[in-house]
Amino acid sequence: MAKLETGKAPSVRVSRKRSNESLAGWLFALPWIIGLLLFFAYPLISSIYYSFTDYSILQSGKFIGLANYRELFQDELFWISIYNTIYFAVLFVPLSIIFGVALAMVLNMRVRGMAVYRTIFFLPTLVPHVALAILWIWLLNPQFGLVNAVLDWFGIQGPPWLGSTFWSKPALILMSLWGIGQAVIIYLAGLSDISQEYYEAAEVDGASFLQKTFYITLPLLTPVIFFNLVMGFIGAFQQFTLPYTMTQGSGSPADSLTFYVMYLYDNAFSYFRMGYASAMAWILFVIIMALTAIVFWSSKRWVHYQGD
Image (spheres, rainbow, N blue to C red):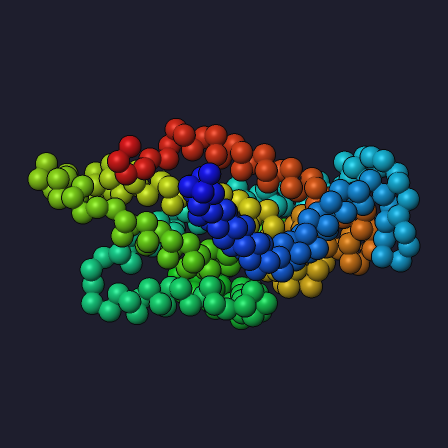
């Protein structure tokens, strides 16, 4: 009996020690858990309920069912904002990937002073979006802007850019492409992860630069491209600061720069239609989730990992 009791004592001490460690872990994580529940879970659940009410900041909401969603689908400006957002996402995301990968490959060359060049291309990402918008408003000015001045030097008459319903969104895409330095850094990390043995074997076989690019670099860079594709679409559908600053929230000219999140913001904080804005937020959530699911589903066919 004595031997049995002494045999149980170590296991009891171990279980108590693990229990104390678990309790200490929960205590250390408790502030974060409280913050998560208070500032994320509660607003998330509340917004679901408010989307079925006519709640505003000024008065308590009354349950109205699907009235907000029915009104949204009959709202002309709602569809205009969706069109503008999809237009921006469909053009900006592929262009950001093409220019980002190309620029990363150039910055990956072994040239003296390359660290300086990488820093220069990364600097635009450090500029606040408000300052960036003000800078580009001056650059794209149709009368004395630097962009049209350069085009005039080549004998090309520059468009009105932000004053035209046709050129306003391409102008915004141009501004956004100027700040893809963060994605370029991620592409550079992906390029450095590709083993040089693949290139050495390709050189032995007499492969050209283009063959190495399309058969080695791009296939092995697809995991990074996949990541930037997902994050790019999420960011594009949440475009807000640049168009809001340039148009001072008006979305002019003729609502061509009224993006989805801008219209959501106006409904929530200008018109105080919190229930309506909550319904818009959940529609945006469904769109982004569906698009992300499609990208994840298609990734099995075109994303390749080293060693597979």
